[in-house]
Image 1 (cartoon, rainbow, N blue to C red):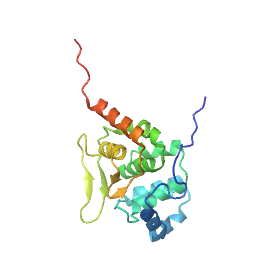
Image 2: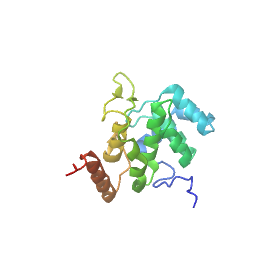
Image 3: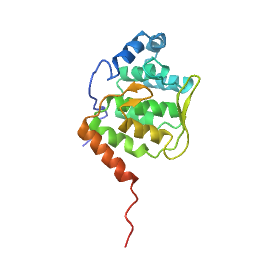
Image 4: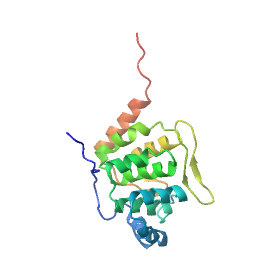
Length: 186
């Protein structure tokens, strides 16, 4: 049986499950309006690569504008894999994981993110006068970002879509099991 290339999404088809203030700020953003010119997945990827977008709370940062632009393209599973496995830019990867957190059915989040929980690639996720960089160590990098996306209600000051309690508990249990050392042979 051939697996579908369509990502199973959930929530608000128009707003992408973004906080209402953030959604409105994106819609009003001059930068987002410039993104109308980009018609293909590859053009948006090039824009991310060339501008290394930053995130900043509920403002219409370049990253959130690009994230919403990706949503308007209705990415396929193959394209999302292309984002999160991208070898040229951690920013492209970070937006891929954030995209999944906003639109992927919560029951599938673990399957998407588990493989990346120990990923040690650095990513600067916030700009301005005090940039936030997740440095290389087992818990402060793309892997840390994936863990935060699975467990936190907020990420860099913006509210994430709620993960239903039973799914959140299951994720917490799986994270606990991953952190426990394997049993010693007797």
